[in-house]
Image (cartoon, rainbow, N blue to C red; front, side, top):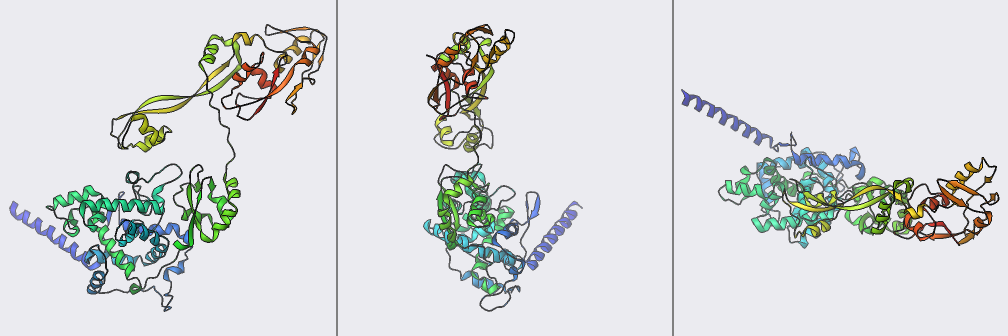
Length: 576
C-alpha cells in the first residue's frame, strides 16, 4: 500500500514538472527569481530602471515608437522569426565567446526585442555614449569586445543604477568587490559610478577569472554569482567545465544571466531585422570631453554659468554623490564639448560662486609643559572671568575588528587615511580578520579654564575697562568721576590720549588690587599692534607684554571669546 501511494505521488510530481516545462516552452518566457524578497526578473528590472533618467535624456512618449530614418516605417511592430533563423544568426556572429541558441536564449530575445523593445531602443541610444570607451579598454586588456553587451544586462547602461542589495553603477559592483579592484567610495565620490574606472575594474576581474576557468561563459557566470558558486557547480556536476552542463547547479539568477547576455549580443547585432532603432540621449561619446578641476564646484552654479541643465551635468558626472565636486584633489569633470571653452573662460567665477562661506572653526590650542605647571599652581581665583579654552588632543585607542568591517570603513570612522592606519599597525595588506586588534588615533576636545600665574594676576591694570567700571562704582561715593573710552586707530603705536580721567591723583581699590593712575601716567601708556601667528593664544600673547592680561586684551579689542586667527592684528599695551 505504501509503495502504491509513493508511486502515485511520484507520477503527480512528474506530471506537474512536465506541464510546467511544456508551458515554459510555449511561452518562451524568462524565469523569475526571488530578489530582496520579491519574485522578479532582475534583468527586466534593470531595463525598467531607465525610466528614472527619462528627464535627463529628454525622451518623449512618442519616441518609443520612432520611425526608421531610412524607410520611414514605424518600428512599433515587433517581427518574430523561427528557431532556425535565430540559430543561424547567432552562429554567424564572429566571437571568441561560444554563443549558442536554445529556449533560454529565446526567452530573453523575446524580452529585449518585443516585450521591452522601447527600453531596448534607449539602451541602444546610450550605447553611443559608452561603447566607444568600453571598446578601447576591452581591446587594451585583450578581452572580447562583446563583453560591452554585458553592461546592458547588468545595468541597462544606467550609470546611477543601484540594485536592492547595493550593487552600483554601469557594471554593478558591490562595495567589497569594488574595494578589491581599487574603486574607492567616500562621502562625496563613488568610483563604482565612474564609467572609465568601473570598466577598468571589470576588465581586471574578467582577466582574473579567465586565468582560473579558461572559458568566457564561466567568466560571465562568475561575474554574476561569484567564483565560489561556479566552483561549487563544477564540483556538483562531477568536474564539468561547460556552462550548459553545470547550469542546473548554479543559482537561479545566474541560470538566466548568461542566456540574457547571448540574447543582448544577438539583438544588438540584428537590431534592424527586429525593427529596433536607437533613441539617442542628449549627448554621445564624441560630444563630451573632460577637464580637470582641483577646487570646489557646485553643479547648480556650474549649470547656471554654462546655461546647461543641472540634471545633464549630474548625468555626465555620476561619480559625484552630492552634485558637488570637493576641492583639494585633481578631479575629472565631464562636459559637452561645446561648453568646454565657456567653462574655461568662467572657471574662476564658477569656483568663487561654488565656495561656501567660511564657518567659524575653533582653533587647536597647543599647550607646553611650562604653561600647564603654571596653570596648575594657580588657584581658582586666578581664572579670567570664568572663561574656558578648547584644547584638542590626539588620543591613542585600540579598535577590535568586527565582522563586516574593512580597513576603509575603520579609517573613515577615526578620521584617518587607510595609509595611516596601515602604517600605525604595520599592515602589509588591506585584509582584516574579525577579532583583530588595531591601534587607531582619534581627536577629542576638552574645555579647560583659562588661568594666569598668581604673580601676574596681582598686577591687574587700571587701563582695563573692567577696572574702570569698578573705579566708577567706588568713586561715585567720593565725587570723583572716571571716564574710560578705548578706541582703536590704524597707527602701529600711539598714545592713549582718548582715555580722559577727570580727577586728581587718587587711589581706587577694586578686588583687593590697588590702582594708582594719574592722568599723566595714563597718557604715558602706549599701545602697539601684535600680529597673531600660528600657535599664538591670548595667554601666550599676554605673557610677552609686562602687566598685560588675557582679560585686558579681550577688553581692548572687544573680543567676546578667546578664538583668534593667524593674521589678526591685536591692540596691546606696552608699559614704559
